[in-house]
Image (cartoon, rainbow, N blue to C red; front, side, top):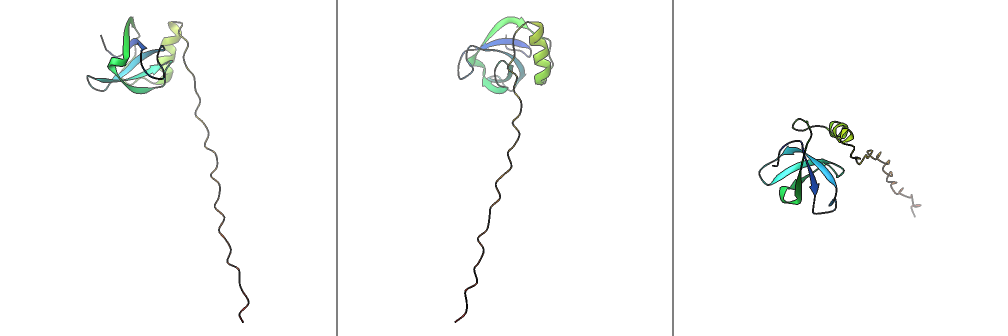
Length: 101
């Protein structure tokens, strides 16, 4: 029942209760998911498979999964990458010249 493209319900963790699709199967115990959840590697025991399967290839991108979820009328979680802030420059202490006595 656990296969690429299978729509599942996450039943454990921070994203519990959200729908996701299996994008890649790492081994018999773990899979990579994407959908309403964050794209991440999860334990298969934390997923409840549904009857629905979407036609995606192994390692499909987030946008490909989003298109298929839109066809099923399931809202996706859309995030944008944060722009890195400039690092503060370290100001070195200036050596003060003391008058020689």
